[in-house]
Image 1: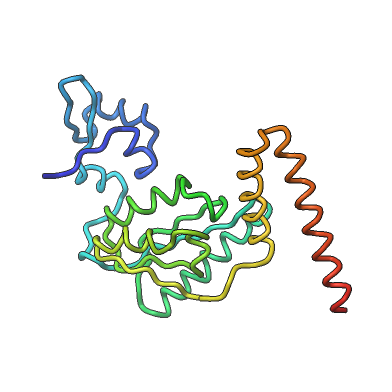
Image 2 (image 1 turned 120 degrees about the vertical axis):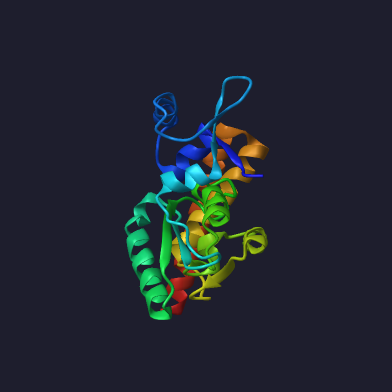
Amino acid sequence: MERLYSLKEASPLCGYKPRTLRQMCYDKRIGFIKTQGGHFRLPESELMRLVGHKPAPTNSGAVIYTRVSSAENRSNLDSQAKRLEDYCIAKGVPVREVIKETASGINDRRPKLLRLIEKVRLLRPALLVVEHKDRLARIGAPYIEAAIKPFGCSLEIVNPAETSKDDLMTDLIAIITSFCARYYGQRRAKRKTDRIIAELKSKDGKRREKGA
């Protein structure tokens, strides 16, 4: 049976806002099914048409996922995407989607990461390409790999090297903040986190001076 999507579920996948999709249903510009409760549902085939992807051979091409931890490094998203696109071209693999996200690698509720899994299910690419494992997830990458495997998609890591020190520090700060907030409460957590970060930076500076 063909899967049905609510307008809220379909919105991030096709790029139309829920209210726009609702109006398109009223105008009968798209195919839909109306539930007994009066809610619109989009069949998967109609959603694919809206996404703008022509039917492709099952498990063909690649979906690219790029990520940086903070807005300061956002310019790196384009360079990441360019490197991965060049990699796919060199392998003769067509790129079917490029997803860019700015979020911590330890955040398992990243909107675009969750959307990525759904894109893989819809598009059925042969490969999910990332620059290195930590770009996909700092923790839990094997679970994502297991989630896409039933759809005939394999995870391809271009560079197995670790991420930059800045990214690691950003994620470490996120972990410390999270644990401090739970233990000390929100206000005290910020002060505690600031002290811990200052100590870490101080120790790092002393190690560099000794190594010089």
